[in-house]
Image (tube, rainbow, N blue to C red; front, side, top):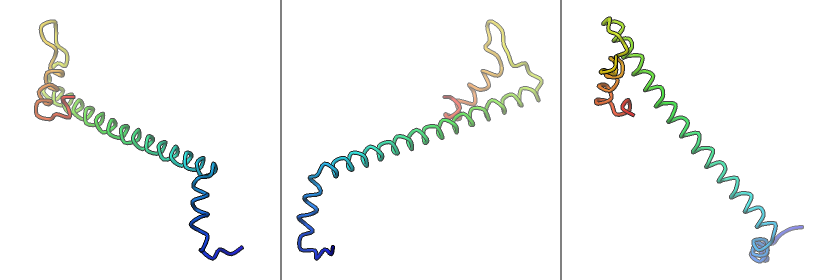
Length: 99
């Protein structure tokens, strides 16, 4: 069956009003929303992973510094400890560590 193009506009309008088109549109929209949600979750996971790496790097650097200087890590009742205080100090200069 050939289409000569004369009746195509009417056929398209008829199709747009059909139940099949409505179902297909709902399915398409739903799949697009799922993909958007998945990509947002993936981006959030990547950002969280990067933050964790930055924090771990800071902790390792502070640990290495304290070890090289022969300083204790933990404190006592009046002091929170060298490791905690050193991380707080680093956090003042690097906001990504402060979090």
